Amino acid sequence: MRYEVFQDRRIQVIDIDDTNGEHVIEFVDPTIDESGSILAVYGSGDGWSDAQVSISPKVESVSAEFVEWALSVARRKM
Image 1 (spheres, one colour):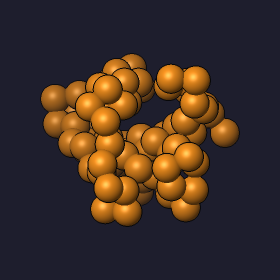
Image 2 (cartoon, rainbow, N blue to C red; image 1 turned 90 degrees about the horizontal axis):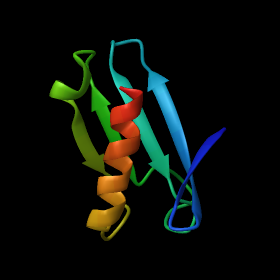
Image 3 (spheres, rainbow, N blue to C red; image 1 turned 90 degrees about the vertical axis):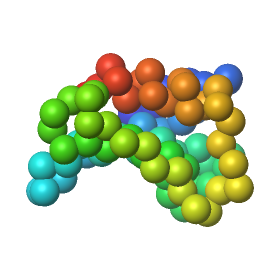
Image 4 (cartoon, rainbow, N blue to C red; image 1 turned 30 degrees about the vertical axis):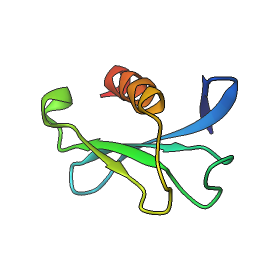
């Protein structure tokens, strides 16, 4: 498993190329939700220009600072 550090927390980063041609990068923070990703960045292969962000409905909110950090990690990977 790959991890990145955000504010002294280990965030699991899952990088997936699915069979439909979508590239998905999920961010799992076990201190917020142990059962799944709290935020995902995905796109259909055209790189950063078509990327979208999805926030899990299981979490009440995600800080803007976390979103900004996650987007910078995802941008490096896409």
